[in-house]
Length: 203
Image 1 (tube, rainbow, N blue to C red):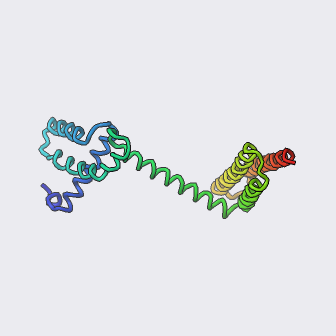
Image 2 (cartoon, helix red, strand yellow):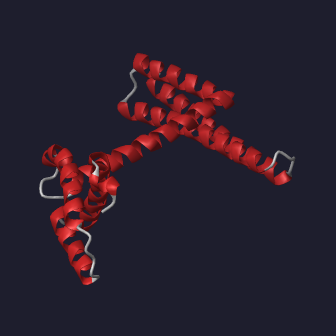
Image 3 (cartoon, rainbow, N blue to C red):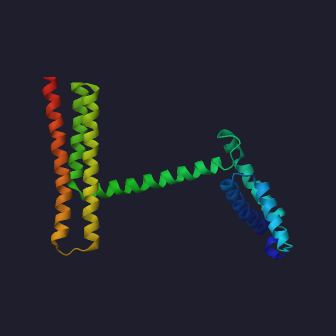
């Protein structure tokens, strides 16, 4: 056998890599690592392999499984891979949140109108606290204000995409940018109209 596998550090790394693969297969197949290793050993026997897959793979799998045992116990019992699935989802949500934050930061720096509408939303929320309109009116104004910010971000994305494709002047590029700006304007008019109706209902 290779000397790297006989050394302590190399053996632990090798066992850990095999164990991680076994745990992944167990997660997707819904079986225990021991069952997966036994099946792989059967395949190795059929192929006439003398490699001691069981000892290395199972050792690594058991090491990783012990590290996750407490998490498995706190989550859904009897479902292998539940903790790993949860960790994957948490990591994915964290990455998505990071992308969204980066997009907001770009829009905040690049679009003055986004900053203006954000300040309008803050003022509107303070006014809602002071005026105390019905809850349905508060929900409508808050939702429309957030949608207005979303429209601004989409408009910013359209402009950035067009500028990335080409900075040359073109009628279609101008039409796309103008249409995005018009969508924001229509949403802004709807936001103002909602405020007018709420104030008329209050006074």
